[in-house]
Amino acid sequence: MNKKMIIRNAEIKDSFSISKICKNDLIQLTNKDEIFKNYEIYKSCMYMPTEEKFCNLIEKYLNEKSIKIFCCKDENKTNGMIVVSFIEDKKIEVLGIAVDTLHQHKGIGSFMINNLIEKFNLKYILAETDNDAVEFYRKNNFAITQFEKIYNNTKVIRYKCELIK
Image (cartoon, rainbow, N blue to C red; front, side, top):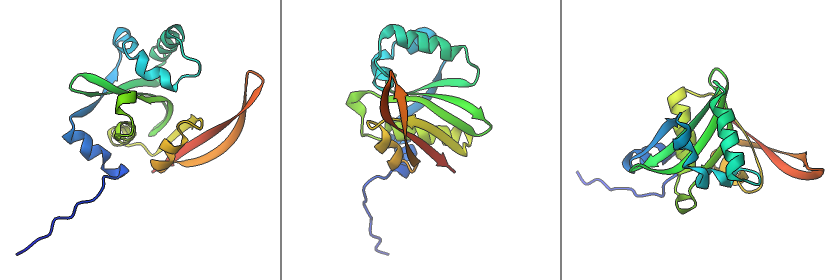
């Protein structure tokens, strides 16, 4: 029997399978010093980042039982981080997600989202973002709602991103 092989471009839904091939792993971080090493990655999702702000934020996160910090590793190198708050059973809010600039647009952010969905059987994910990241959520099938918010007496455009499974 003559079978044809079909080759296609990878899609978002393939990110979990691809990550297994690429040896990516999503690991929960609980050690403050280990987390602090990842400032250069995480700062890209912070407003006006400084190491001091980052350290204070991580201290706060580590003291909240509902908040979990995960990193995506490949060969012991951190390529991405995601911080989530478990707001209810099977529901999370993404507090921050960032991928090392050298590894962006390779499916790592999508892998982290999809891995959390599978690992915790999530039914709902909420995130708030800006113009820089809204397309990431859109391509991962989040519903997007634009709204205005005031920061330092300045009106800015923000986006509420929701994924319902």
